[in-house]
Amino acid sequence: MGTVRLPRPSLLLVSTRGSCLFLLFCLRLGATCPQPCRCPDHAGAVAVYCSLRGLQEVPQDIPADTVLLKLDANKISHLPDGAFQHLHRLRELDLSHNAIEAIGPATFAGLAGGLRLLDLSYNRIQRIPKDALGKLSAKIRLSHNPLHCECALQEALWELKLDPDSVDEIACHTSVQEEFVGKPLVQALDAGASLCSVPHRTTDVAMLVTMFGWFAMVIAYIVYYVRHNQEDARRHLEYLKSLPSAPASKDPIGPGP
Image (cartoon, rainbow, N blue to C red; front, side, top):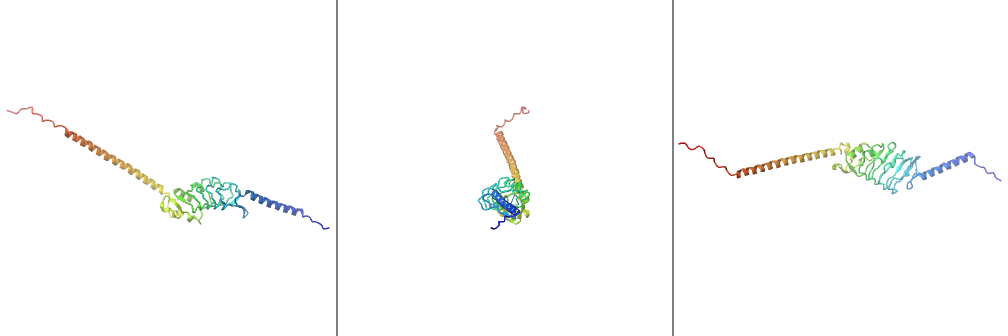
């Protein structure tokens, strides 16, 4: 009768530990990955792929140790304040090809230190508050948004680290100055153009209009005053002419002898 050799205890322990670790990894990955997304291994880090999932909002159960988050090509229109503040290890955030219309001052709170790339291209963003993106050190893509070019946008752009590969595709959809519409905005600003001079010119024009209005009122009052006095003088003269003439007084001294 043949003998059955049992596995050595050390090998059995190693095999059991390896299986348990693999099982725990699979359970952890399946439990923390958002339901409509994929979370494949990304160079030993957590990557969350939620592209083309028809999402209308940012998933709330994104793993805290995510380093790559792709939410592109969805239907997200609103980014709540602090939506990513628990993602302290996040390095790349792709929100391109959505329907995002506005960015709040606290939308990207908590990402200032680690984020390296923020893609907001192909959205519906019209205005960018100065404090919304200014604290980020990441490269930012803003191309193909219907931006309204004004002084506030110019001041915000100077604070950003724009992605050089897409910076020439940032154009004005509307503008306080018509000559900016449809043209590369950063190129115009680099050439010395300014969106912040318009308010000053508008103020100057308003002041000139106000001064002209006051001047016209003064002139009108003077003309009225002169005409009114002329009419009073004419009436007074006609009144004097209408008075009967006084009879000539008789000489009390008679004629001499």
